[in-house]
Amino acid sequence: MIRIKHNFGEDIIIYEGAKVHESCEIGPFSIIFPGVEIESNVKIGSSCIIGKKPTTGSNQTKLLDFSETVKIRKNTIICDQVIIYSGCDIGEDCYLADRAFLRENVLIKNNVVVGTAVTVSFNARIGSYTKIMTGTNIGGKMQIGSNCFIGAHVCSVNDNNPRINISREQQQSAIIEDKVVIGSNVTILPHLTIKKGITVSAGAVITKNLTEENETYIGIPAKLKK
Image (cartoon, rainbow, N blue to C red):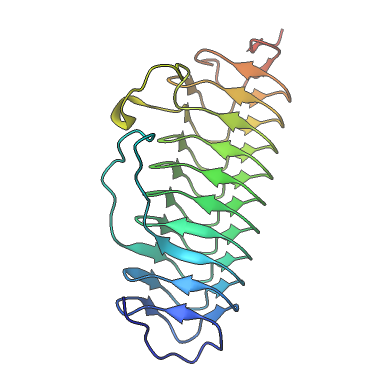
């Protein structure tokens, strides 16, 4: 990789093959890898890594194919120490708080908020106007609709058989439809669907499909509130 000359300040590395609009702001010690495309008026904080390639290892399940490109649309704000892997596509007017971590092939639509220290794992999809709060884990291949609210420290998983080494193609986190509200400290098991407009109370554990639209579910395991 070859660095390119730029006017964004000292201690910033932008490699040849990256495209960064001249109106952007980039904080010190940030690294922009080849294949990254950043549109106008994007603000990137300090010590960010954009376009990182995943590393494979003998103790890791086989990675899915990922794109070499990263796209960050206009007016998005990326705060300090954010890491974004290859293949991610981030919409307009998004906000990624400090230490947000996006694995490969994540798609984020417009006007999404990703809170402090949120992890969004591989191939996840997040719809427009959704908010994800501090410390939440979004599992691999999870699908979240638009206008959702995911509270702090929610844990979603894509595999509940950790002793069995299954491929990533077989792993699937939950599907969350539009306008769903998930309270803080909820646990969401894989291979289930949460229907439109449902509210899940704080601390619940979701073990199966939640099917009654616009209703509230509570408890361990989560059940329809009567």
